[in-house]
Image (cartoon, rainbow, N blue to C red; front, side):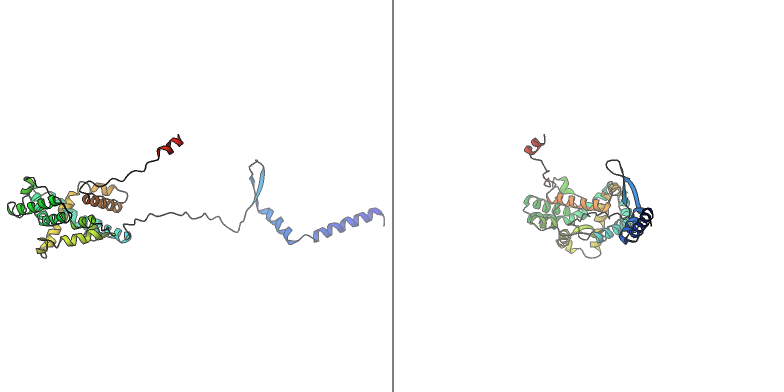
Length: 285
């Protein structure tokens, strides 16, 4: 055998050996290269990026922080009660009565309001006394005596014409003045928005003379009349509720603002706005 023949045999033997020696890892690597896509790297050159076809793309779920009002721990229940009050009771009963009330002659409207309010006047006077508002307490007593006599049981507000203006002070405000907290916000069916403190206050006020003398069903009539003329007062502002993005939140915030306004006799404290330190502003400049 010559040298040429030996060289051919040696080359064939080497090629056969290298083919048999290729392992499974090299075969997997070769297969993986078929599942590569070409992309441009930062330098502008083509680069291959392996694609895993076994796992579909799944975006990570977005996390949202939901605001929780600590004043309103029963918001789910309260919202359902708000829907019932607004969409059922108000829509079909209270609002039609309020619209009908506004069609009555003005003296009839004023007489109804004055009569109901006169029943609450002793409660205003007593709460003013407990809050050490002696002048308002004396005014409340004077108003009740004058309107209950000369004003024919309060139908005519003679005291107002004499310069004795009404000052509403209820037991809920009295509790607030001594530091009792609001407690949870509650939306009651047929009653509307309140808090635990104001609910207790309303009950106590209903037991003050002459309120406790009014028996069923006249107590319900008194409550109904007050609800009707109070709803009539809202007819001009109800568009604000309809136009709000969340009527429930709007009514709740309006309730707390009005409550704060009454507690501080129309002059609630203004929260101090956040102000940046002058030196810090100088550093920014």
